[in-house]
Length: 258
Ligand SMILES: [Zn+2]
Image 1: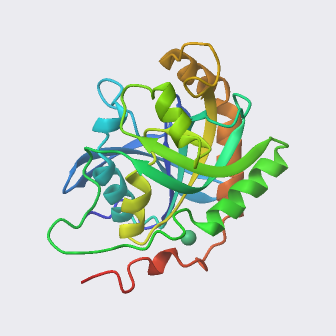
Image 2: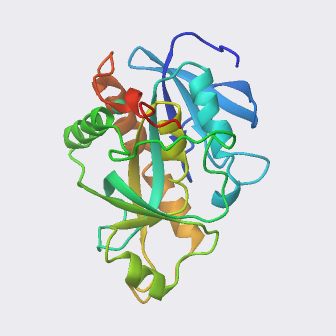
């Protein structure tokens, strides 16, 4: 594990179309799971590492993202908090471009390395998957910006195809939004006792919610247009996060190991 900068406090894991990092200083981070490129900057007096989830030679598809390397990199640079941005489809008719602060998830992924613990048994606690302190900071940031948002449950699918109408009918019984990148990232963060929360942006209505065909272009387009707003929300969130952690995220592994 290498220490890049002792002072990195918060990591931002950016989703589709999140390009706000491009002018920052790039920093390679070696992990047991592969190399990660982080982009370092200072926001509101705090040193931040931005890791673009899909960045690579080509746009990395959701099922091939190296989630373990990304979360290991966050931990290895000493950051204890992760703010994630995820583009999602709405199963509740949320307006496109509006925001959802995730408060729970349901996992439909199938073929992803989903744990750091393959050689021992660790049942990490996910009764509160998203950090309450970061969520409070996110809500305050959205309110300050006067942006409409809700809170809701995220269904994570394997992809890379979009969901069928029947799948959305089923998932809409117990989740509000659907995406492909939130899991296993949130669980891996828990396994390393990090605080993790997600700002989801509605990029489209889920399959069968409208008569329109789903396209990947509209996803990139919506996030691209909301770029400045997303950056402002994240900056304010970073400012709002208390210096010391008072949440229970750091105890996620207490009593978890057999
Ligand atoms: Zn926390």
